[in-house]
Length: 119
Image (cartoon, rainbow, N blue to C red; front, top):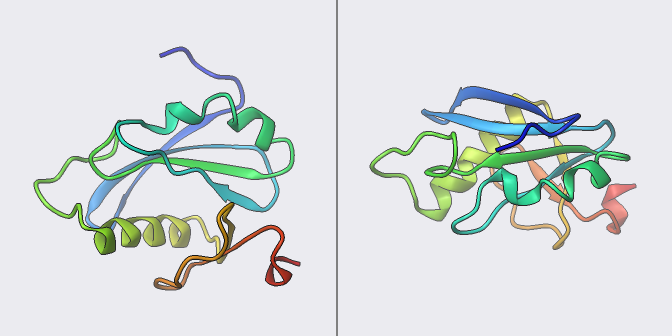
């Protein structure tokens, strides 16, 4: 994997596992979540563009890439709590979601950039 300019790699022990994510840019946080069987690297072309106006966070989800691969914890609730732990760790009380606000979990909430709550 080649190094990409402006992208920083991070790890932290969160929700009982070592989580890996990359970040770039400054501004309101935008979280990019990969699908199966991808990693953060699937967003490598979008990250520099979004980083012009946002703080982009692209984690490797539980079981993928450089994030731990425990024997259990792949249910939706646990994986959502992994993201809540990451948003809390980074101090993001609001994050931008491109698909509208999902149900609130923990102390992190998601709002759409077009939502009245985002202003």
